[in-house]
Image (cartoon, rainbow, N blue to C red; front, side):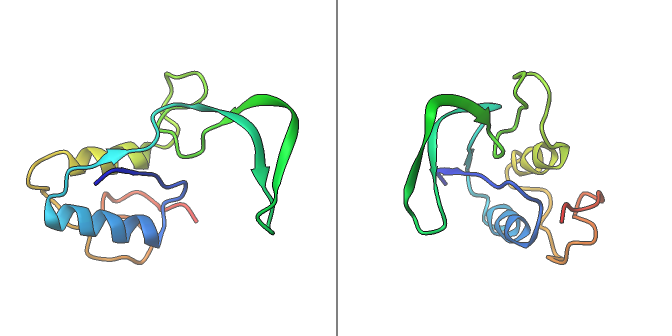
Length: 108
């Protein structure tokens, strides 16, 4: 599977993890970087709004923080590492999000 990324640890993440692990899919997670180059954003209507000057913003999907050394979210790394064994040694069963399949509390 090509690039994918998630900013939170919720139902969509668990559903994708279950799908990938049960089918032994090879993946590429996006993104590693802690910062991204930003020229603007899309507002709720889909209109592009430019910043007065381009800048670097935190990459919320990134595995690393802005210092490029610190892990942004440990759950993301642990879950991705669990997918690396082939075939995957676990398949998440409960998509409810009180605790995840690695026994740490889910982000809301």
